[in-house]
Image 1 (cartoon, helix red, strand yellow):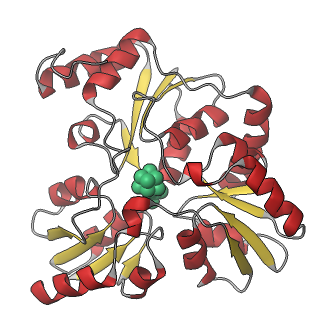
Image 2 (tube, rainbow, N blue to C red):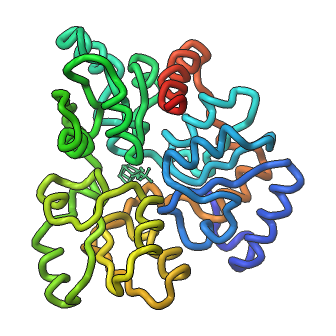
Length: 308
Ligand code: 13P
Ligand code: SF4
């Protein structure tokens, strides 16, 4: 159990982390939904794709992955010679738990001609029995790169339905979903658009089809940063986890960002605190371990994605 006042105020904690990172030749990667004070000290901040690429590029010995477990696992799968730390071991993703490797094998039996595209939000075991991974930033590209007339997409039905809009292939979806993004809805967006005339609604592909239908722009989290930076609009209704708005506000002080609904918080992305980072780095705790046979198979799926 960590006492969150153990290490002093935020600035002191950030300084301790900075020193520990240097001492251990470590790099801190943070997902765009992380707490503000973690975004502030990240060596690199990004979406799932950007973080995977960055984890592969670094020559640090240790990767401190501030995100959720599947992200840290992907870094460990690709970098067996490095130590990957997930500062709070309980930071998971409910969508990951909505499908097992056994479910994937059953799907393959049912549709033997269809390659399996695993969203990175899957366990290492599921990746190991899939053909290729994708993220929200490249799902359409991945699906369209595959041979044949149909593909299986796991586990997110919403990402699958979104991809279906941009491909002639039949997309066979598993029934998983992201609980926070499921809460986005067109009614809330309509109310906000009336309140903020001219507001642009930006949605994530994990949103429901009804929400995607009313979106002005749909992209991964890093794509959203780029979009709001380049847009001339003043008001933006943001249909993804609220943490993303921290940097948006900072980078675009003349623009106004409004969350598309009050429930858009991912509790798992908020489980990591500065104290967890200090504790795990100081004591070399919460290191990701993946069985070697699973790692080797899962790596092929991630490599196939990165090769694109
Ligand atoms: P991206 O940052 O890759 O768009 O993903 C969002 C997400 O929900 C990750 O869990
Ligand atoms: Fe999982 Fe959704 Fe949280 Fe992303 S936002 S980690 S998909 S629950």
